[in-house]
Image (cartoon, rainbow, N blue to C red; front, top):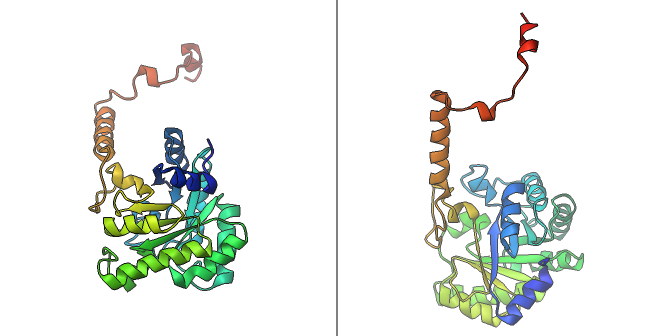
Length: 275
């Protein structure tokens, strides 16, 4: 079944939980798609977990196009959402529209994701008016890490909670088809999810959201630099990989690899003619 913005809305209306993961390459996206994931986000988190940056601010449009197209080629059924990187939409409506169009045409995105609330509603309106679905993102917005003073839980006091609620309603009104809530107190996220008609996808926002998303390196133990509190490690693939790498090194050094079954043969008569 092909997942679309329509099936996302239908899932919320039926009370079915949506599942999303990040992916940045063909083979990983293909495995997720075959597993039955509803949506794949080609996130600018690739700056941290793929490119080794300190944060997402250095990620470019070219990065997102390159990785977005690679992941999209591995997907048949999941909805492919691609992040708009820092300063690709904050500079105005025209830039936002042009760059969103590039992600659809060049990165094969089926939707784009923007961080921010009321201040980016003009961009959301313009992009959706052009026929490009928009997923909004509130709470901890990594592109605003400097303004937020670090990676902190958002919406903990009354004013901040009220602002989050109002922003959620405004991005919905502007035309967003879904909303990511990141690092928001669980009860507040649950209230917001009920107050808006579009699906709310949580990451560190509790089970009251309409769905969940995680960075796949976090949930597989592939990114040891930092593990957020909200992550559950569903497998320790990182340790399995390290063990395999060590086994390979040992096998090469003790000459048990390559074995005969890993090698190609040639007639002895041919070899004799070489001398």
